[in-house]
Image 1 (cartoon, rainbow, N blue to C red):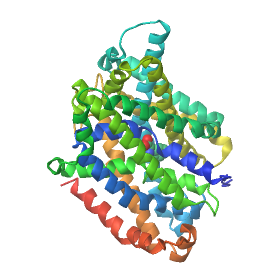
Image 2: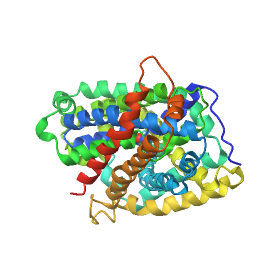
Image 3: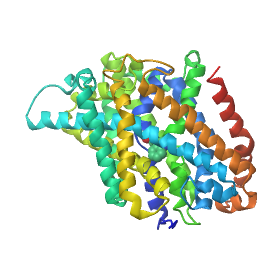
Image 4: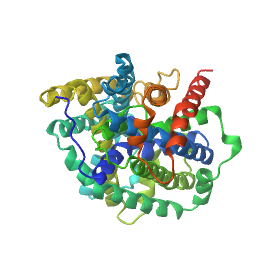
Length: 442
Ligand code: TRP
């Protein structure tokens, strides 16, 4: 029953885990967070956290998955013989559940934009893309609920029909294509009038822009893009055979995520300044600014449509893995229960995502804690559940697992990285997470 399927090649493993990790986090969330928390200063903090905290934690999650070889609400007890530690897996499961709830809102926006642009092209409508009014689309409760429903439905169908493998294969050319598109947008954006201002904004760290909040959200952003603490990456590595190169995979995922984040920043900020938007627009930033950039290109609508489809693809490869995590935890890898579990989990996700979607329309007036209901769901996941999950795993790895066994799975190499990594995970990172975690409540 608890039989895990395995990756046949390391490229398969890297592609699948990269497809899951690279999604809305880098392309949509990074630019709007950077816009709110100081541009260059945010980018710098994000880089520091991603490399010095995120990378070792990602390697840790891969190691745990490879050692445990099972689904994540069982893996902790399997490794430590302590049943209560499965709570870390359940924490991750709760995180991905809520995450899917607000992720689907943005997925839904992408779908609505796709229909809008396609309709515009098919009707030979010459209106500028920039006139796709964000407010009238995203401000419509019915439209956005439909979009979100379609996004969840698509995810559900892919998981039910078990065609994820096909999607992973498609990643092979979709991800590079997305990179190419991002580069095209960056080039266009950089040639706009006044773009230098925006370039400076995102590349030049200004010390006066560093705030405690910015530090917290930069850490949250690193967790979010690398899927840390949600046990997503543990799951991927649990399908990996003994000789999967986890360090190389972790490094490639970190680098790809950094690259996409930076490209997204370079695509958006020069255009923001050039078109006179405020960097602090929030979650709608990308959706407001990009159409205007495409307007400046020949065949802009066509390119924009292709870009949106690639963007949707990146979001779907993440959302199927969000749903897949719930499915494997609740079916305990028993494939006969797969379809009903995927169905009911999707219905539940749809229900909890309704208030998140309406945060941009009828419920936009409800504000507490971190902001709207949408903002609070994101805060709960990125700043509470993910750090808690990662903290729990550092404590298990550093204090309960056998060091020699860890070393065996970590793999030997000539750089002798095992001990520095081990002590970082055992002592330094838990303290970093605890300190930052406590500070946010003071
Ligand atoms: N890293 C993903 C992104 O950037 C979001 C994410 C977090 C995720 N945890 C996950 C995706 C677990 C799949 C599974 O979009």
